[in-house]
Length: 114
View (cartoon, rainbow, N blue to C red):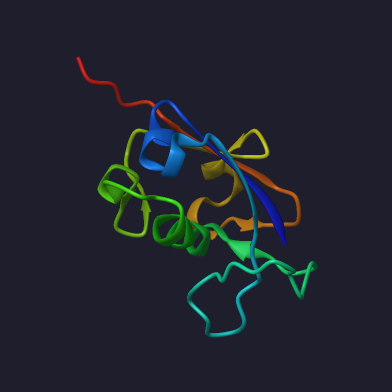
């Protein structure tokens, strides 16, 4: 499954090379599997990936420093806006939202120092 992940509002600084846009390919989890696995050629383009598993994958594979600034427990930190295809993720089901082929997920930090 192909997904586009975008990071803004300073979150890109937590990633390697401060890259804002990441095009990733993930496999759909099998029953009982609690991790998303990155592959070069997805075997099942018809499946869905829950947001909860994607967040875990992002933390383990894309966040290179200060993961506590991105996640808190199983979810994103308060103050991080998450959009799935330009729609607030809370309207899509939050952690239970199921991502499909070619979805775009945007993470924007609304937290600013001062």
